[in-house]
Image 1 (cartoon, one colour):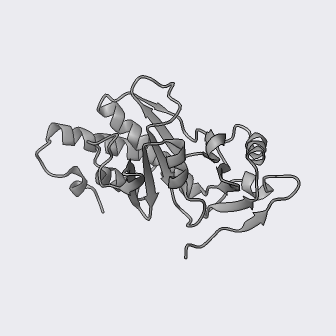
Image 2 (cartoon, helix red, strand yellow; image 1 turned 45 degrees about the horizontal axis):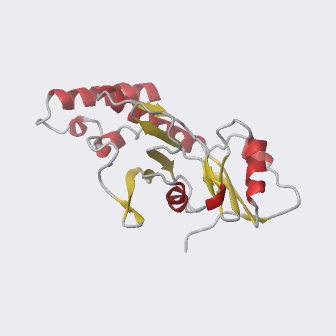
Length: 229
């Protein structure tokens, strides 16, 4: 049984708990509101405003309000920055859309990724090509089910120091070892730069150097093997 977050039933006035508007220190914090309407979801989004946190999801009558920890925010941002370094090194056009609110009332689905991207030069698409989710604290709404209803083709999930792409095939998401949207990106190499206490800028520089080495010597040793463990 997957442990579930605290549950609150619907009350007359939907409100965001004050502690979820503050920065969380170590653990993600979640509040779940049941028997909530789509209008309730829209009201909670409006109360939150343009902040990127707390992040809010809606799934057929359930609202989840999640305040990410500082560790969660560090990992999701670092994954995003390394994806951007890779795209720059490989001349791949991209648009960063962060925690873009994806929602569709007819499908009773809404959520906000940790990071998301459109690749190519057309940034006007209604859905990202790639969404990234960090699972720092277990439990919560099934995000993959929401991404499916919202039409996102590929989702990366980081959990327990492992980054796993999920792609939509045969009416469900399947975990794969290689991204379909960025098939030449070595995710195991990228993971190595998510460990440790390096600054974001230092990790970006080191990852860029590893990519340059891989390009200069594509048949040579794995650049990850020379990194400190």
